Image (cartoon, rainbow, N blue to C red; front, side, top):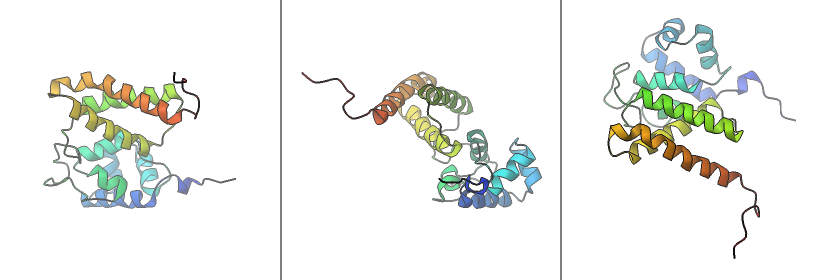
Length: 175
């Protein structure tokens, strides 16, 4: 039997990178929590590793110029290239930042995972969200088509989830 302690909830390296980003802005925890529209105690829990940051919080950090890839993995630079904190106009992936699209995609993914009975950590959900966001952008010929691509991406992801969960021998027999 494995016992999970509150201190095991979050990656200690993620907590340290979160603190590094906050300090790069020369803000204390209270001011940073206010800047990110997060409750002070919630932010403290993120930085102490008592709970993992939520997707919306990580999105806000990206909007402030934090390289989300660096935050989650430690790879790359802390700041989005050629950006100073709080001056970023795009996500750390170089994709255009579209809060409405990100929100709608987040809602669609949340519904999909709930319907499939799959629980993801907030960090894993953030990773999937960024991957699917990139897919939407890649499929659309113009920004006007972004929203119409969400159902396409969700349908593909649903099929991939179902295929990965299928038991061997549960498919139809071939003729």
